[in-house]
Image (cartoon, rainbow, N blue to C red; front, side):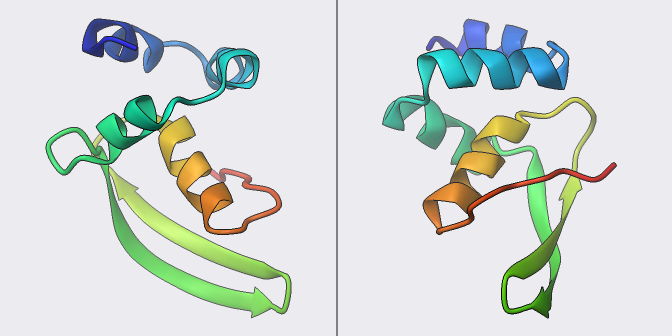
Length: 87
């Protein structure tokens, strides 16, 4: 995915971003692009272990919308069964 396409996609509604990601999947290069410090629009803030099956992670974002999909895939890559944003 080009940087122009990535920029266009972050303006799409969350449900449309998720639909496109589900159809196309994330290539490693697309995913890593959004995790580079210059492109990453979120910062780790805090985390809380709620129970044996639940971790709540708080991140600070530079603005909304942001490339949520890259962060969700990071959590899934770390073993999360599901990732649910709260606004």
